Image (cartoon, rainbow, N blue to C red; front, side, top):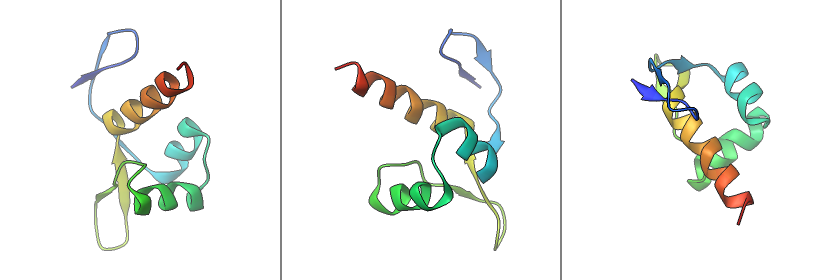
Length: 71
């Protein structure tokens, strides 16, 4: 379990690519480029052809971007 930005506990979820795109505002090519460059969370492999991202990793990435923009 992790907490959201308001400090409320939320259960860990696995997010598929369309939901990640919606949350972070990036498209598939930018997300995978970030994964390759080490600037975006690495996906979790579900099967040979399916991946997802941990919701806590995506939330942390978004929080880092917000913090960086405030500086």
